[in-house]
Image 1 (cartoon, rainbow, N blue to C red):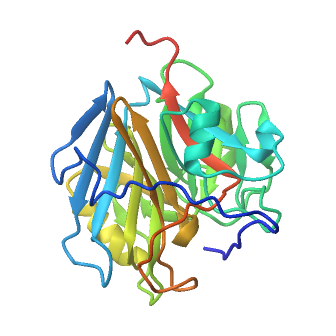
Image 2: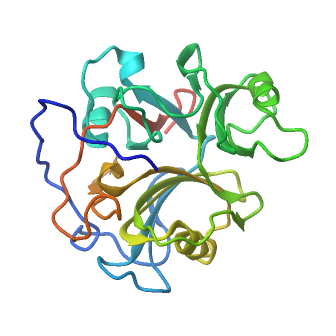
Image 3: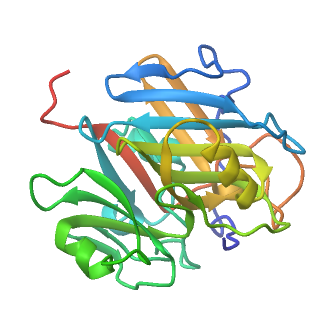
Length: 284
């Protein structure tokens, strides 16, 4: 996790944020269908956090019905970042979450990131988790999270099969192993996961946890989580969903390296998001 600051000279845009505590229609426990192939779950953590509501939000997405997309400044040519909500509105996304941590240029993803014919960052760093989508041939899953330290897996082998890759810090190694050692630092977390059926999971927890403890919470939810990667922590972390009559935005607040109070969140501009929209080939 690296520390970011808001863009120089940019005025903070205060958005109406619907928190899960007050959003109508969102309940704990069983999955709530928002659209075909898209379900929302909100789960209470087994161990309360020291602040916040201790809830974990999971948006479960069937990649056979929904297309995973990368949207960012390097792709659309913009000069300044937007919130996940703004990226969604501009590019007609049904949901969006951070694409991952970014560099000091407020533009470049810190790990390898390519999207179809577009290359955001050609560098391959030490991060062990790679989310791959846009398969190059029939018969491959639309989405999969790979572990670079698994036998026979490398960036080259993944690129042979997939046109889009996002490399990030690993949280959970396949098939459900907590790979984060215990530490004192804790923060709000946005994460990307895969379940045992190959579905995409947009994961958000605003209450602060160490990643070791949050991983254990996620593995104990009974959602079939097999792999996950860290996208962002602290006030940069955000999730936006607008499906049918359901619309909400959650922004992170907590982070040991940021601030320790549970104040009203303001969504920060971010340069890159992962989003979903219905596949054009699917009749709804």
